Amino acid sequence: MDKIKMTTPLVEMDGDEMTRILWKMIKENLLLPFIDLKTEYYDLGLEYRNETNDQVTIDSANATKKYGVAVKCATITPNAARMTEYDLKEMWKSPNGTIRAMLDGTVFRTPIIVKGIEPCVKNWKKPITIARHAYGDVYKNTEMIIPGPGKVELVYTAEDGTETRELVQNYTGAGIAQGMHNLDASIESFARSCFNYALDIKQDLWFATKDTISKKYDHTFKDIFQEIYDKEYDEKFKAAGIEYFYTLIDDAVARVMKAEGGFIWACKNYDGDVMSDMVSSAFGSLAMMTSVLVSPQGYYEYEAAHGTVQRHYYKHLKGEETSTNSVATIFAWTGALRKRGELDGNQELMDFADRLEKATIDTIESGKMTKDLALITSIENPTVLNSEQFIKAIAELL
Image (cartoon, rainbow, N blue to C red; front, top):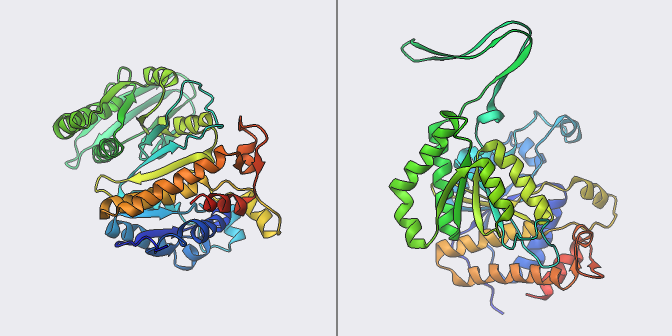
């Protein structure tokens, strides 16, 4: 059988720990036998990031700008314990944060639906994609402990020295205060990424804030989204047969619980942080959650929504068997291959991505799965496979 040809390379970002082991297995068993795989390879493993002073992360983001589509393995964001473990020069930043900032992208997370892994919310029949605005608000706040009576003000000093003041609170005793911000340019980028991705996958887009209470801060989010939609996307959405829908965040939550799914839910930073965990947990497992970073310039970076599976990696190093779920990592590859095929007009590559996803789902639905899924499946007497056996079982169906 002739291997599927590629014209443009994918940007391949390798990673850390157990996901790095799975990455190699996926390539050897599910990709290289079928595709003449073209990638521009970047090793984002922590050791090499340390060796290059994190330059490799910057290089990989620039390569994504050049080629348009990347696929990324899970990576370690170092803490104090990792500083010692890896003898790091410094506590390097999160690669995801660096890449997200350089590509000016929005992260979309979508659960993978499989029969036998039922959502906790029984009416959820289709995936719900969470789009999180990953800039500002409480994540870039400034906080103060207020020791006693006094006042806290917000002060804006313009470049010409003029001041605008707003009273936050007259304190009669001890308390706390925080200041938050966001930027119009960041909100605009978030809005366009959401509208573009909705057109990409032809699904309705929901957006929600609390503009009735936050009449300037949240209302600005609402206004920017509406203005961009009216000027740039209204006709495109109508032509695609999809809808942009705005409501209050509490109403959105109530509606989501009663919906059947099949839409994108755009959230401000904190809402997205909370709701993406709720949705992934309610759909079954973080290991069954895909993630794609989409920039308004049309760059795409696909990865699994979970971490490096450190506990399984330590077992693997001891020579012990692991049963690590590779589904989200497989779907990162299929997402990237499909998008590459779409951009290059390579139908064979797109069809292969569909076939690999179907083989993965069919394997699980036949009762063959990793231990984490066996613990939550409604399929009777599932066969628990180890990490490599599961990947090889998928390969048999290709």
